[in-house]
Length: 172
Image (cartoon, rainbow, N blue to C red):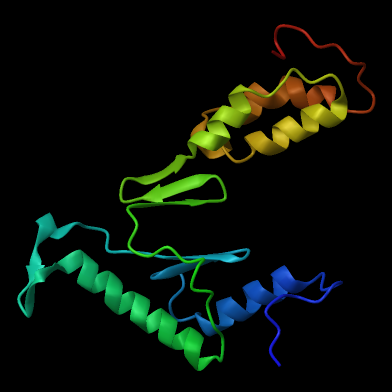
């Protein structure tokens, strides 16, 4: 019998998973793969190589070949550790990947459209708890907003216990 789901009460599962994957793939991190919580992103080549093809097989582009070699090496390490991967979950050879609200691609890291829409459509907070929720959501995009801390300071001020609720145009 083999477990395919965690038993009820396995509260440390994320930390255990991340620690095990980091150990198993330690020689591949950060060069070829990044592990984040329960996701792993295998990095492709940093260049398209001008669509160059490999001499051994002219129908295969060099960037796909290099990615396949990296993928094979990582999957081998996972198999050697006695782990399996669900066939329905992975996405291979995709031009962009959405991981925890960030879209990673050859162009770099951007914010996912879903995160932007969620922030833009967030209702006006009526309680301190709702401001905390909004600030938590905005934490995903703080890397992309210059002076984020200064911009959000008015909202953070309202979350303090010693400050009375005073929602004004500055907050909006």
